[in-house]
Image (cartoon, rainbow, N blue to C red):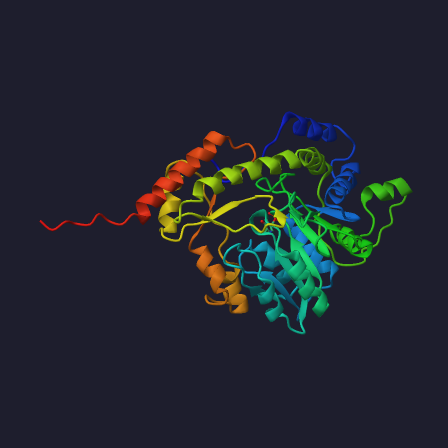
Length: 385
Ligand SMILES: *Cc1c(COP(=O)(O)O)cnc(C)c1O
């Protein structure tokens, strides 16, 4: 089976992790700050806060802004549920807005139309690894005085108008789950410039306690204070050692993803039954996912046939407002975000990972084209006898 995404772990990654296993600090040691600095410098921000998942990163951003009951947080309908869940963790209401049909990125005009006096944050999602229209979103956010946040769980390594994702919003969340651009097994990070927000999130990941065990040991004290209600969202030194080693390979991996995307683009250019998403010309896409729409086919059937033939396709995502939790808790229903809902019926994520060979790419192209051709071909016209 060719999976839709897969991590790449080398001997040097393994050695980095083993070295930490044999050191004094398994968790919250020197590797955490080292990994934070490396990611901050890669994306060009003054600070970064590492946590144990992308979800924790999103939650920490909500906490740092003081999002709470009665507040609204604008999110796109077509994303992983965690984008919206982070607002709910803090007692706020996620407000789902539609995406643009061609790119499936959040629609800046829909964002503006959804702003109310209760709006506390806008969360943009770089769907599939393509940066959103940050200039338009930033313009909306500034005019209304609302912080723009980025869920960049797909887009580490992407750029917008030459600037790396990570420094394009007030705070940006990344995920290091195995299918994401680089992995720490589980892990996440927030990049930002504001030192006060960074301080709040570092405290939040450690139960609301400002110092960690290693700092107290260095200061020769046992005393600590819990100042706010936080969580254990700490990432381990083991994971950060893996992340540091993976980060060194990000650039060649993203370059390989772009090569694979070009091969797919070329193959599907002349095929109206297989439509890749539109990519803006002022971005460099990170291609966490390669998503196509197959408008003339039965998506469920194509999905099953591809899986049966060894091609591990997937669907990203069920629009979040259609999940039972959101329907029951917030009364959301079909019709709320019609473009996201229409896209959901037609989308397929086809295999995309840096270690994929050209032969595997061609196998995916051949099988998808063949299945779509059979689905969209007119039934043979029966000739009169
Ligand atoms: C993966 C992902 C998350 C959650 O990240 P985890 O590390 O799995 O918690 C959030 N948002 C998006 C868009 C994602 O793809």
